[in-house]
Image 1 (cartoon, one colour):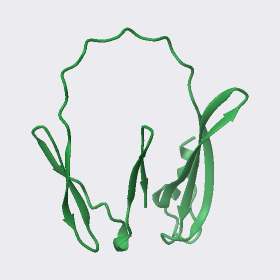
Image 2 (image 1 turned 180 degrees about the horizontal axis):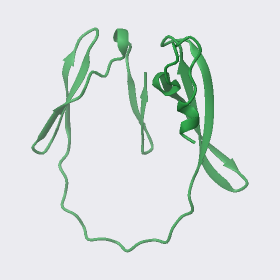
Image 3 (image 1 turned 90 degrees about the horizontal axis):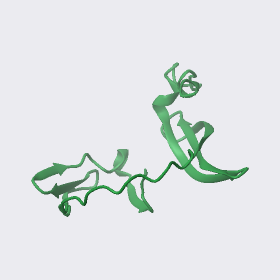
Length: 129
């Protein structure tokens, strides 16, 4: 199924793979005949802004398995500390410290200084460029 998304070229892009300029446009929960799943819509861009085409697939939820045995209680974890490491008109980087680990994120601003919305919906981390 994945090949279907990469074996075509977008008109006007000199024959590059369609997956190169692809972004997930939306993910929506769907229900059909007692099943639930996610409708994932992809958008391909010619020049970074103009949508050349869209396509969607449904990924159905699998059957729920038997409940497993409860494991041993783990050790308490470290609380992450998050600070702004660099913030300019074109750059936004975070420093994330967890225990002895200290990392700097890549630039979280899109090209041309466009912002990135990073939010949490339930247990899903959402990046919107």
